[in-house]
Amino acid sequence: MPKYRFKTEDGHKLAVNPDRLEFPNDRVASDEAQRALVDMAKKKLPDASRLHIRVAVENEKNEMIYQASLDFRSETREEMRANAVEFTTALINGPPPAKNGH
Figure 1 (cartoon, rainbow, N blue to C red):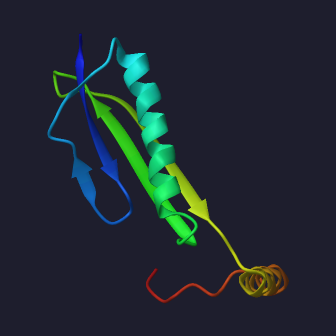
Figure 2: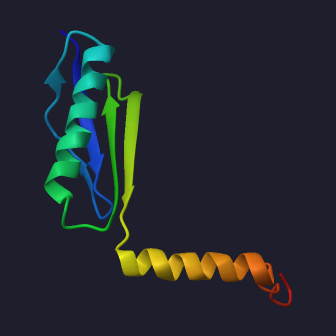
């Protein structure tokens, strides 16, 4: 049975599983990677207001056969209001002036 290695990134560090896991084919390994991504999110949330996590699957030839990522962002009522004011101000005033030399 083919063996696969998973690499994960939680926004702060890259982790490479030294052990290769056996799966019948690429599709089953990819499905398991999706489940791993969900498990990672469950462990990090709800304690994070922003989260970027990624998982990649490598085959026995060290070829990347699959990758998936999840971006999560939450806002409190106060943050939504502040962002709405900032957005509305930008719409009214236009983009900020360009810096000299850029």
